[in-house]
Image (tube, rainbow, N blue to C red; front, side, top):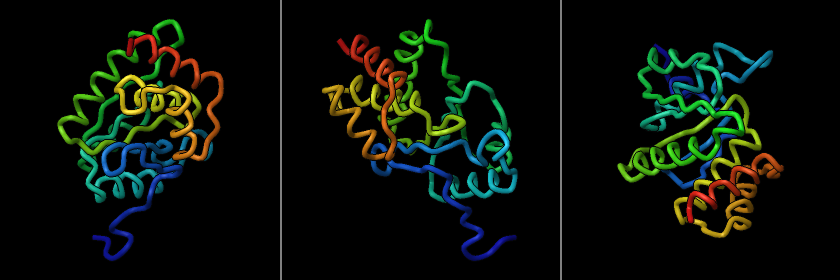
Length: 167
């Protein structure tokens, strides 16, 4: 059994709070592609568990390594991000589920393979959809500031779709 700081795991790459102590975002634990490391994945999942997260929500298109959450006793959901054609229905369903989890006081961490423009757009869109930050430019700015990432066209398209759903 590991002791000391190693028993706590390591913080996932690009970890950021979107709603302090309730909703966070990161890169897929262990990384992706040629940068993926099994040991790093395990250490990052341990960190997620030890930080008291109730659930990991993967927005990655493929279900890679989700079974590792089970092995380490971490609850997870898989909401694979769709193509552009199904975006409105996906956002409506996902935002409703996300709101239910947050209202139930679940501490959540979301990820895609990387901290992408689409993932940032999903988060900014949720802030608009939920009414927490109803002005789209401000929601985009908030997520850009929190993640240190510039919102590109794909992310802004998602925010635009969330506006239509919010009305």
